[in-house]
Length: 184
Image 1: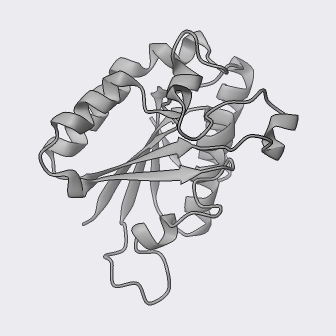
Image 2: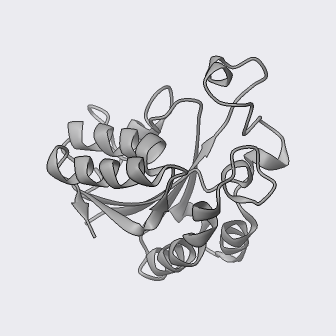
């Protein structure tokens, strides 16, 4: 059975104290997320890191200040997770998905990588576990896409954070009650 841990947007611009869209709750989930990544790799599961990636003038900057510009330190994975990646011997189990929209599926190769494309020769993912930021934005819209593809999802509330606590709670409730995500 193919199981994947998706780590959503744990990048410097969202997590580091000096990040463009940083918020304190993002730093509070680092220990939980690093433990989940180590656990997934120890059990030979795959880990997918999504990386929000934008270019100057991106239309999203009409909604949010510029962030995660391609090739900048703000776009990079946080050091705690990059160190795990650097130490991993079997890098075939680690994947990076660069995205420029809320859903990790929009305009990316994620369907193919998860074996969800019609006629794919890659084994179809059986289960996805999810952690990351922001619960009510990129985590939620990626979970929604997985639900629409009938992929079972477990969301770890101790491994998700948002700059808006009410929206964080609402998104977790919607994941559970509307999308059928197992929220633990």
